[in-house]
Image 1 (cartoon, rainbow, N blue to C red):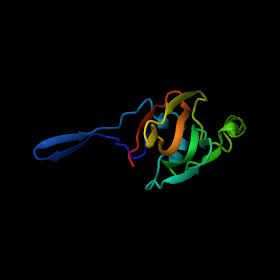
Image 2 (tube, rainbow, N blue to C red):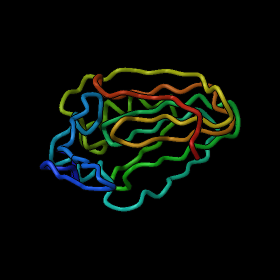
Image 3 (cartoon, rainbow, N blue to C red):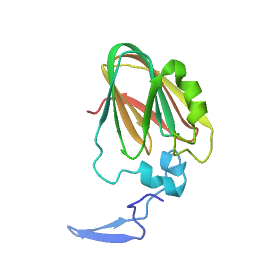
Length: 167
């Protein structure tokens, strides 16, 4: 299901040791398992990922296609940088308008969408100056500056990790 994965057993000899590269394992908590096969080309980058940078001055929400929604409680100047496929469209709105925009544009402007329209909410308070939100199988978002909290909506089977920023 994942582009570029191993399809057969491949043996590699090195220093008298035989290594076996086996077919990939499907990860049950990965966004790639939650979409139609035809949407994989939008989600999986086909070249180096270029960061998409946003400056924030008030509470903002970002829709990543119809796959995820991130709401940020901004307490001053802040920024967020998206690291994911540039084929995915990111839409920005004020958090006060997010529910209305999601309902109005889900499946049309906000696409691709997951196979099931059942979303789960994850929340955190920013614990350090820079923090990443990792959406398994989709990419990550680096938050910096005066962001007090973040809410992330993803399909119920997709895992989210909040970590210290890697970049």
